[in-house]
Image (cartoon, rainbow, N blue to C red; front, side, top):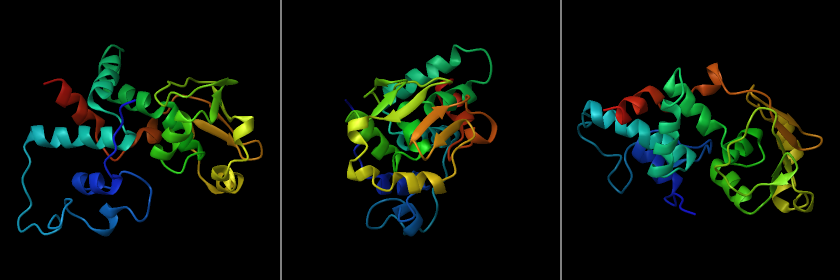
Length: 205
């Protein structure tokens, strides 16, 4: 399965924003582009409208760990719906199984969540799902497979879940380590580090 393997810190510096929640992300420690001299820029480069739109697309792809063809498919599906295309695009990205796992707190990052899904750690509505891009729906219940619960990766999960803030469209039960999709993300839950309207403009040229 194709996936992005570049270091998240280097990609974050290229985009000028941290693409994960790690406080040690390179973009937070060393602002500026990647490379030995990336932080030393005598004069900031001026981007064209196309360049700005491209960078927003790249932020989204790299944040969710998606390659171009799959990302374009999400956009095309969003355009076929009546309404706000940019909102539909973000909703589709947020409701990917690997992102849901991350948002619930079962994974430490989207990359970590994707790896756990690939290795068959989770079930959706009682059935094993090992496809990170699996589209979850309202009412879907996500649980850890019984024979995976004692793995070291989940040793402090209950404590983490009790402390974390879960998005309003998800519900998590720390006691049973079970998560549920209660609604479609909307409003504040759709705010991202990228501007989805610029992505729509990029593909609509």
